[in-house]
Length: 262
Length: 370
Image 1: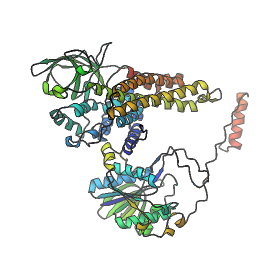
Image 2: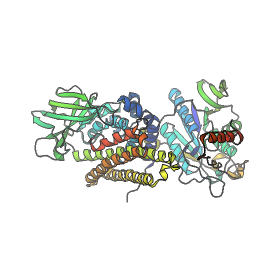
Image 3: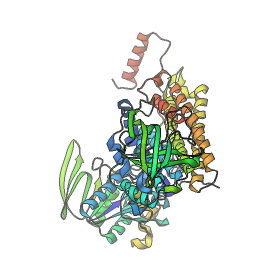
Image 4: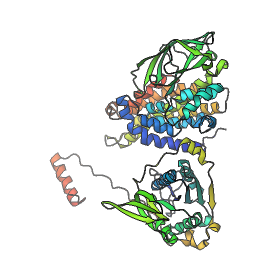
């Protein structure tokens, strides 16, 4: 069984995000970058599949040189090797363009299963896996909370509103992993040491077979116009130097008329 | 010039230790302190990540990772940030394994190092500290007397981590002759040896979750081949210096937890109309706590680096780092408690535990070797 994991590097969940001066992105300096947490479930699941059935695991990422650090984390956890899609032409890719790049790797690698995180925690689009399945002509199972591989098929429990749906799919397929699928392991010290020696192959535009106009800003169907920060929370109101009974009356009135919560 | 940029490996090890501390140690610390116990599963989890045995050479079954006091310090600080008792329990087997790895004879390495490369946490430790007010590392009151084809050891030890349940002990004793670090030797003693008398579990002010015990060594016979490094012995000054560097890192970890907790509390706690962090008395205290933690950490890193590259003044630097860290840990954790005021004295907040734990560094010696 060959399992391929598509991974995205995102800012740490605890990073404080500031919009860049031009409003077109975020300030990337002084941010800690991590593997998107849902992708950790995908990495862990891939390793578990290999431990159970033997085979090979590959992690694929699109991004600048900084994403290599998160790829190393996946390799330290136990993934066998990596493919790093990096090319100046890839900059500014939207989800569809990213999926095209990933699909070019997958067509060469020919895995049995492609695992992705349910969504990346930065842009929350959850689109690339669906595009990927469409480009490849493979089935896609979204938000998998339990996975069982049976020969040339997979039985997945999907998280749906109020419960779970059990579906069966043929392989190869694309699946996106949800919280609860597994408990991702820590990278062990020997794992960290071995990760250094594992191969990370570069994959540039020339290898993808795509045109420059298919990817990056040129190929993006969605144009990001700008980013806005969340509005500041208005300051709280403080009531003092009044009789308690009057204060309560005032608060209740405002809760009813202004906040409209009672 | 020394670089402060960790290598890719060091960064990943630090990240792993931090995640482990956040998820596995910190949430359990309070309960472990209340119940005087460290969960076996946590020790096992740390063991499986190779916290002790990754640096053992491959021919003995380890991963053959390069041993570095700097890397060890990075990891120890994170673990101690999670919980000092559990950090010490996780690292205690290194007290035995690392001196054997560095100074052991080939037969000693062949016999003992593979035991550390199994899948199960191995309870191993060292017995160094002695219950005397004038305890002095360079002049141990535990004596090893050469008798025929072995040594006869007599003396008392205390604060031996996992002292009642260890499978392997590295017992430190002074040889006959004039006192000095050169005269201190290590002896490999296995559980159940005649003359190794286990005492009581000690009731400590801090690190309550960690089992520490007194040992009595009464005519303990150790064959000559169990003297660490054989007749050539070992460089005990280096063993001590490595221990001091590790303790400095552990102290920085404990102090950092108290500093961060106090800082976050001060930003949220409102008194007299504004967060107390806006008050100079608190703001200055926090700034001082921050620089004290950084200062101790940097002293420790410098000494660790000197130990890694075998600079002759590493010993002195390690001692200064440890001396600084001893005082820093008490002061910073005391301030951490003070920032919370009366709340800090209540066990619901962890700051009182960190003060009790931080107080230990000046009291115990040589309990962790990285």
